[in-house]
Image (tube, each protein chain N blue to C red):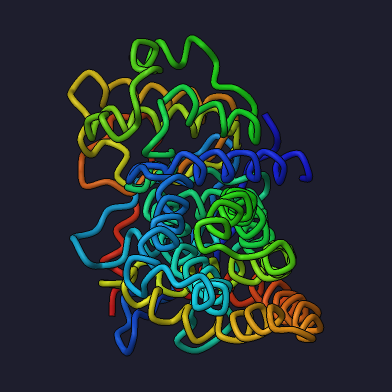
Length: 219
Length: 198
């Protein structure tokens, strides 16, 4: 059983990194994230004081939007291809399958995003303290973003226009992570990190059950 | 091969407010094959998915529905269960890690050996069907549910599928085949699902 779970995790990570049928994989959301950091100073002007004040928030919003990009390939292609059916036939619980998908999604995008946040912080002229807090906040918040992404992708799999709907559903669910994560950047706001992690943990605990129920209902 | 048998009783299927069929009983023992026939829309595929445990069975009245398999169950339907973005060899290798490898002679017989480097999405309908059959063979399940296994296959491949089913049953497996096409298999039982339609 655990051998099968490892095999599924390995396969999920590879497929999500490479992007499966539609291509793209991890690279496109990361490039999107970086390009937001690049164009933002063009739009608001290069005033270092202004950028230092809003730059951290911009990185958080860009990270959230980048997490939405891969939603339509998180669950739907495998539902369409019958992989979930075949795993169910082998007695592998949907809860496990969703938990693994969540881990694979996190592995395929969060480390790359945290790495990309370093040049993004440089482009926005953020100081070392804020950059460190952004990295810690992303470490605490990205598991929650991954969980919401997988849950919503499972719920909208098979729906017409599911991808657009998924993007719309993810945003309000990610608001707590965004508020606490970006709030932690303010002077004296470091306790926001703990609340970001707490929001992530709730979502991590909820998603395997919600996602599995959505998979079963969608058959 | 492990022991194989099926006992299914009082199966019904409801889609929304509409009943497709009810009161279906199926008993299969080791080595038996059943050909499920019915016009379109009667619920062959739904029955297959109920038997596979993917859809819950409903009961109109009377005793609750009940499906009991002896041994693992393999399902072949229009969803081939292979990664569209990966080469066929890698897509099959994933299932080999879960189920065990597909025998080389089965791959050769199905004409898949030269296709192992080709991404699954470039395969034709018939080639995908043959690839799914290879996956099913590799699963080594004693019970098979085949939903329209001959769709998209050429004449030679249809004969090959009949041979594969024959060998599977001869080795003690069970097989239920839902198909509109005639099958030439010895001792093939036939069930018309339309008799159970509402």
